[in-house]
Length: 231
Image (cartoon, rainbow, N blue to C red; front, side, top):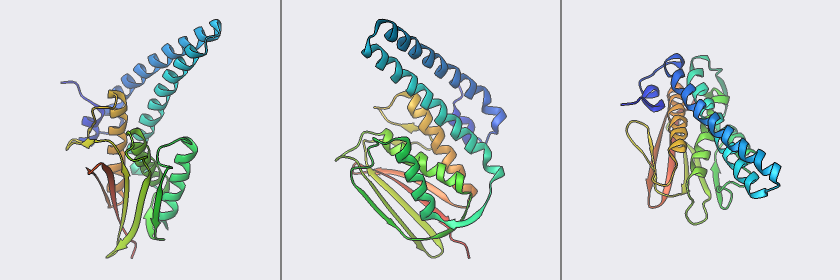
């Protein structure tokens, strides 16, 4: 049975062990970019806007997959070199949300936002946690929204533990015990990218002595994060 990114990440592999898999993934993505670029070139030569648009969509999709997958891999590998500082988690989230909106100005989380964010201190590698939160927001946006989409976030501290709940009405999706994302309406490539981002995010939270969980119930997808509050 062929190995996947998630197989290697779940086994605690280091960069060198899953690098060949990443190289194979990028090779396929580059072939997709090459095919899309050909369509763009043909569209320019024939002045056919539809061909140009079709080609650019292929280029953009494959380019985004490469960026997201390699970013997750680097995040996974970077956890031994974290820079921990005391900061407010709500500020980390606000910056991640602003970054998400800059990257995806037409995202499906804008329709209805309900943000309850208490100012809570944590000891964190800010860059890693921002990327983890960005992964969650993009996970939501990758799924077909229900009732217009939207985003609900609740951040509180209970008994020296920070709890962050992120919810959004989305189509059915599961994350199995191996960490693989399962959804009938998503392409294999997108499921692969979401899987790698999920596993990298799990390692980030574990590196902060915290944890992350995913659930889907009554048409709502939910991520629950926990981090210890500093003494």
